[in-house]
Image (cartoon, rainbow, N blue to C red; front, side, top):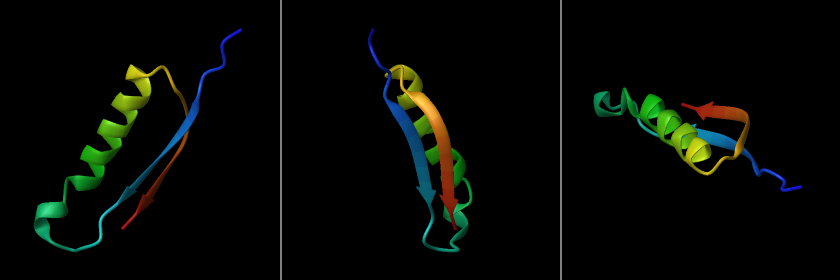
Length: 49
């Protein structure tokens, strides 16, 4: 039986710049896409602002 990798995402923005406003959402979406594409099991997500 093949075991699936378990994965978490960690999203972070280090500035208050307006250009970073959508960065967290973009990081999260990309991480979840990578997990899905690789058939990894999503475990949890962490966001630091």
